[in-house]
Amino acid sequence: MPLTAVIPAVVAGTNAEALDDELTALGFKKVVYNADTGKTVLLLRNWTVTGIDNAGVEQSIDKTVVVHVTK
Image (cartoon, rainbow, N blue to C red; front, side, top):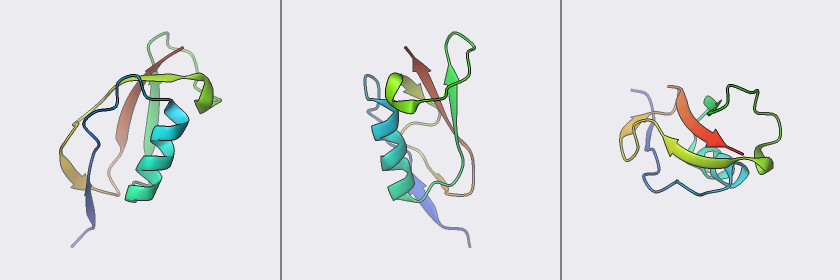
């Protein structure tokens, strides 16, 4: 049975780097950062989180977590 964790629900306004640390600590292995401008997200500390898919949902840590960010 795969390990699961709950995706954080209150993330809007969080620094992307801080959220990445939190998601890693929860055990999520695949996190995708989706920029509202379509630009490639390189330095997470320069981005602010606007939302996250499946907020508050428990899912497998092997499943991709999609985080939406803006500059």
